[in-house]
Length: 213
Image (cartoon, rainbow, N blue to C red; front, side, top):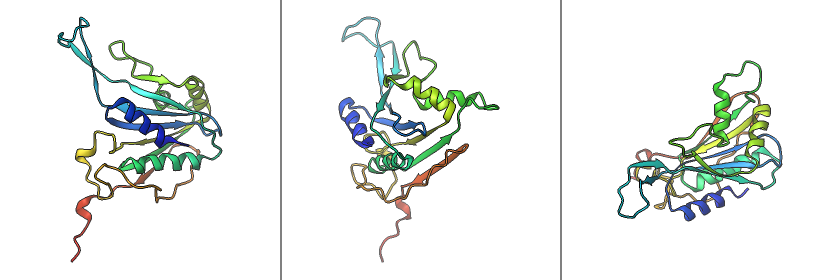
């Protein structure tokens, strides 16, 4: 799955820095995957549409929701694709969460909100503006399926194309905040049995690198 290519296409198209990236999928082969890009930036709100008019407020740039329709058969393939994207874009780590369906008996009400957020189906707006701009026609169906069958979510913060480049203390990165593929870390097989979190740690602090005698 070409997750990395889609992310880089969006970075080049928007020209905005990223805060974070998430990927959400249900454990059912060949279902669409939702890629969410969280941008750092603000939209100026003016009382009149004139260049010289001063902005009266600022609204955060909405996140971008993309539906990836490439076919897949194995969750490990998705896991490796997410790891490759995080590795190549210089993320300190990639965190994978496995979550059960929120419609099971005894589920905490907060799990419903977490499920909606994972797929970018935010139930509220800020000052009348949506929190995400969606190009995901099957999102509602995926949320319904995730609520019944559970889902997986991957999260990482990129250095390449992100806001973290100036503060990245990582000896594994190039000057552009990248790493060369392939990702050398082996994936951990998802169980999709209850709640589980797996963190793939990529970064190495520079101060841990000892000078050569």
